[in-house]
Length: 307
Image (spheres, one colour):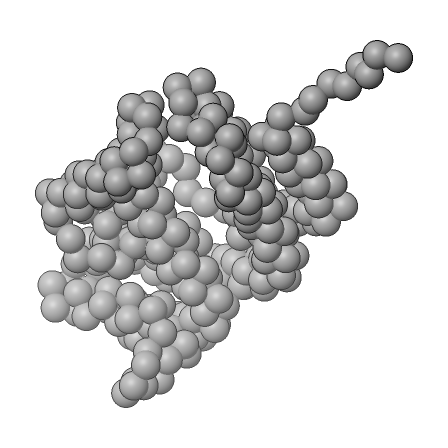
């Protein structure tokens, strides 16, 4: 009797297993939590200033938002160096030309991903402290129209003066207050804060204070206090949403680690390794990495929408 067996290649089996497990984890643990926590992001988008009211942000401002002191030229040189490093690493493993190209591209993109992640971590740090800062800001503005004093009070509510390890938000607020006091140009100092802020919520607060300063305070004092109260409530809601997002992000990273781990295990087989060092294998490897990267980007974008 003839045995009709259909051999399944190891790469295909590993890919199917990783995709199935990833889909199962996504459905069971991630999707519902992420979709149920997006109200905070929608609320925040409703209170942000319109695009026409936002100052133009250049590459230097983006670097400042990430907390690095590089010039745009230095940053570009770092990206080129990372690209060459990726190329040399791929050459060391004698990978095909197509993989060399992808490795060089990955090296070029890696500094930008690192910069975005650093900016995001600074944003979360600021947003964690904004409720306390807004309380100090609102309390001071209820008694005085001096924005420099209000910013100092907001900074003190986050980190008292003389704190050996001041919080990032306190440093930014004191920097803005010092610039406003030194130059007498409160609106210019607030515009600079809005441009360099890694947090859209802090940028929105700076915009509202610019309107307050341009109008001379007075009639807008109550609106500023009410806006601060609304933003404070929104940020407290986002903290709860981020608790869910944090567990969802862990599952997403588990999915990626599982896929990479299965691939690394497959490379222990000589025929598997030889196949992926061939031209067709290189194309397959790039396709698998692209699909995995796209899936991670989509899921991570949904999680970051929560905060």
